[in-house]
Image 1: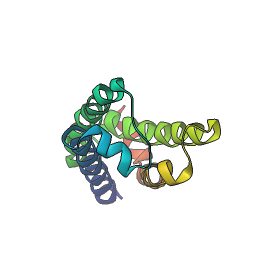
Image 2 (image 1 turned 30 degrees about the horizontal axis):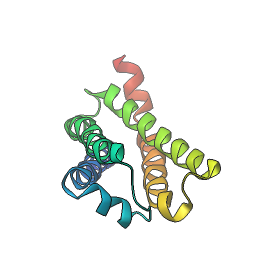
Image 3 (image 1 turned 30 degrees about the vertical axis):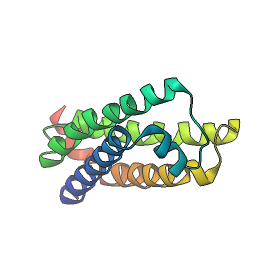
Image 4 (image 1 turned 135 degrees about the vertical axis):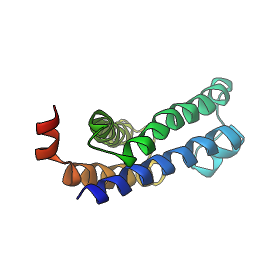
Length: 131
C-alpha cells in the first residue's frame, strides 16, 4: 500500500509541475484558447503564470513526500485536501456557469481520481502510530 501511495504522490507532483510549467511557458492567451476560453483580460496574463508557480511549489514537496510518505504524512494529508478542493472548486465553477465541463472536466476527473487514490492508500494505522 505504501508503494502505491509513493507512486501516486510522485505522479501527482509531476503532473502538477508539468501543468504549472505550461502555464508559465505558454503564452497566456494561447493557453486560454487551448482550454476553450476566449480572449483574456490583461490581469489574466499576469495571473496565469503566477498560478503556474502556485502549482509547482507544492508539487515539488509532494514528490519529496513520495519518497517517504510516513515521514512526511502531513504532505500526504495536504495532497488529499488539495485534490478534493480542486474538485470542489471546479464543480462550483461549472455550477456557477463560469466554465463548462469541456473546459474544467479533465482537471476535475484527474483530481478526483487522485483524491480517491490518496484516501484509499492512506496509511491510517501507521500514521496513527506516528502522530
